[in-house]
Each structure stands twice: as C-alpha cells, then as structure tokens.
Length: 480
Ligand code: GAP
Image 1: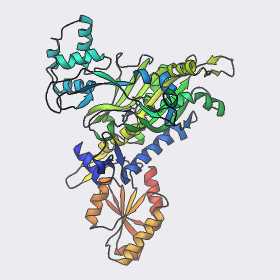
Image 2 (image 1 turned 135 degrees about the horizontal axis):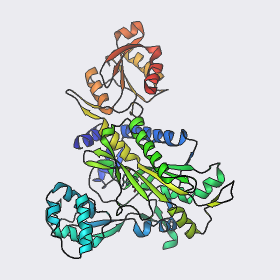
Image 3 (image 1 turned 45 degrees about the vertical axis):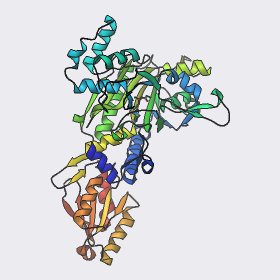
C-alpha cells in the first residue's frame, strides 16, 4: 500500500488534502493523472449503467438538502459510528475497527473472550461477534465491555486507558442563510440515494419510465468519518454511484432481480474495469449488521493490501424510504398501474458504489513490479493517457516538429501527451508508471518513411506503424 500511495503522489494521481497547511485528515486531492482516471471510471460507469440501458435514467440532485429528508430517512437518529478515545494520547477511532483489527491480529482472542462474564445473552452475542470478527450490531455498552475484557491496547500509544464507547453522527449539518435554528438548517448529503427517493415523483411525472426502472445518480456524498490511512478508501468527502431500481413486488421477484444485479456488478468490475476475479468475493451481511428494513444485503469485496473490504453494496431496501418520505412529506409517492389502476409504492434494489474505491481498486489491481520497472497495467479504456508521443532526440528540430504534428492530430481523438524530457528509456519508465498503454517514437527513419515505432506497455514489444494509420490503429486497439 505504501508503494502505491507513494507512486500516486510522485506521479500526480492523489495528493493529501490541504497539504501545504499541514493536511486535513481523511481528505485527498486528485492530481492530473488521478483526475483523468477518475473521470474515465465515472464515464464508463455512466455509459454502462445509464447510456446502454433502456430501463435507466439519470439524476443530479443538490448536495445540500432539507433537514427533513435526513430525519425521514433515519440518518439523523441512526447514522452514527461508535467512537472511542484514548485518554492517554487523545487518539480517536472507530470502536468497531479497533476491536475487529485486534481480533484479526490476535488469534488467541477467541479463547480469551470466553472469560467474558455477565449476562448470558450478552455474552453469547459478543462471542458470536468475536468468532466472526464482525462487531456490527453490538451496542455501545457491549463494545465498551469487549474493549475492556479483551484488554485492547491503543494502537497509537499502547496504553489501555479508554473512554466509554459512544455514538457519533456522521452527517455534516450546514447553517443556511440568516435563519437561525432548525428552519435554517440543512445537511450535506450523506448518500446520493435520498436525492433519488425525494425526486421519485418528479421523475415519474416528467419522463416515460415504466416499472421496473432505475434512477442512477453519481456525485459527492459527505460523512464525518474518523478513520486512519488507506488513502482514498474511506474519506469524509467521496463520490458515489448509486442506483435505485424500482419494481412492483407483485410483478417481479426481488430475489431474481437481486441475482441479476449481482451479475451486472460483477460483470462491470471484471469485464469493463478488467479487475482480476480472484481478487473479488461476495459477503452476505449478517442479521446484526443488516438494516432493519433490508431483506437482504451483500457486499462485493475486493482484496485490498489491507484485506478484503467492501467495494460495492447491494441491498434490497423494500419500500422503506418511499414510505418514510410519503408519511413525513404527506405527498403521494405512489404510482398507478396504467392497466389495472392499482396504486403501487415500488420496492427497490440498490447497488451503491464508491467511485474513489473503484479508483483505488484499479490502481492496486494494475500495480505490477517487474525486474526493471514498475508498471500500472490499467485497462487502456481507463488509463489517464492513451498515447505518449516522443521525438527520439529533443534537440533535433525536425524530429520535434514531426512529433508535435502527430500529437496535434491524435489529441483530437484521445488524451495524449508529448514528452521530450530525458532519454527514451526514462520516458518509457515514466509512462509505464502512469499506465500509458502505447508510446510512439519519431526517429530519423520516420522523416523518410512516414512511419513511427509504437511500443506496447504490457509486452514492451515494438512495431512500425504508418503515421497516417495511427488514429485508426489506436481506435481499433481501444475497441478490442
Ligand atoms: N445508499 C447506501 C449507501 O450509501 P454505503 O454502504 O454506506 O451505502 C455505498 O455506501 C458505497 O459507498 C460503499 O460500498 C463504498 O464503496 C462507498 N463509501 C461509503 N462510505 C465511503 C467513504 N467514507 N469513503 C469512500 N467511499 C465510501
């Protein structure tokens, strides 16, 4: 992970946020390479899930939203992490992460935890959580008990001097205008999903959608997360790609739709992003961690260097959200079946992914160390630059001129870079590290035969290609 983080900084993918002022925890900025990569992933997601499907439409809702949305959705009351503070070094962390990491790295902990005494039902619940390394669903009292009984030390200072575990709401409130108090209060959205639910009526009334159909949204969400490290895996500001797929439960089987969505998500990751299937797995949420309104939730997990972690969640949320918004806003959110006249409050299947996690995953998956080079074997479709154009020598005017002509032509079609720094070997290494799939070199022969050398990033093999065929040549490669 350290190597990837260092490459990301060195080559302009990801920088720590607010760096020149000492940094701001859990924020990151995307450099020129990261911006292109992020944009390519977003475009691919949109094309796959919206453009290429006749049953999907898009939405772009406001980031700042009415406080009642988040009261209705349950976020104001329940969207909270259990936090714990070390009284000695003042480090603040998520209690679930502290305990789960401790369990994972201390094999004898399960044996030790049998000594937890007290109420039998609580003890049973705690033991079951420990054996699964998943403490979601435990109360703050139960988490405090675990920290105490397992004698968990602070990962920062190694002392055992903890505050009790307590809840910390993740929503960012914003005070709007000059109205004081609740009336002027909004929230930065904690998920893009709510924007979809509250616009459900608008979309149905203003478009020709028919059940089953999906509304997709991609954009920033905000959560006051307190988590250490792991680059852009978990940040306070992040990009989500969410779909609410609405259906009438009397006319469609949610189980079948759920399976279909599982296949679609898998297909996107393995075929569109070309991530290795061996690094992916499904994990079914336990009863304790699943939201009370969800009938089934599964996570598609990726094997990051810090373990298998959630990449993409898939949940059957029933019609919980529409019901809540209908009850609290007092607006009718049902739709009428045009054939039977039946009023329907649709149910939803929700695939929800973090685009920044997709980005981190493709970087991890593509990072390859070979004997003489580090190469990012990104799929050409998402690589920041598709082609780098080099004049063999930077001080030969006619070579530079020809290279510039090729660059000017190709940049109409693809993201291309012109590079004349250092020697050819160094230029190849630099392009390999940012994942540029093809390098074009203009040499002295090019001035005679109007052909250039194209070098393939993965194989390092080279072939001569006529300059006039270059853009077709790359188009064909990108389409294959
Ligand atoms: N609407 C459902 C929802 O938001 P979630 O599991 O909280 O569900 C969905 O989030 C996805 O968003 C996650 O699978 C993850 O990829 C991404 N995500 C969530 N919190 C994140 C954070 N703090 N930083 C980066 N990505 C995050």
